[in-house]
Length: 128
Image (cartoon, rainbow, N blue to C red):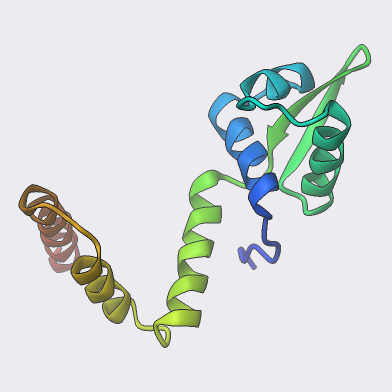
């Protein structure tokens, strides 16, 4: 199944995001992309090991440098996260989620119109 079993912690997700945006990249690059105050490199190494155990990333060895790349696409992870959110908090109803999102967030008229355009395009595509 295409289900992503594992959750990333906030710290792991921060590193995973750097990998997604810049892959493939070396350990040194990951450290460089982290915001100040930077965690100790041993901390980052531990986080990478955990992310690897969760099978989100792998690495290739170049000499003795590890070059990391993702095994899970960012879209798949976020789609999964969104699915969990809808399941756990909105009784598995995407419609309930969408109405909560549009009513509770401070969307401008322009943003709401953009959302409507996306929805209209999806409706049209389903008619094909």
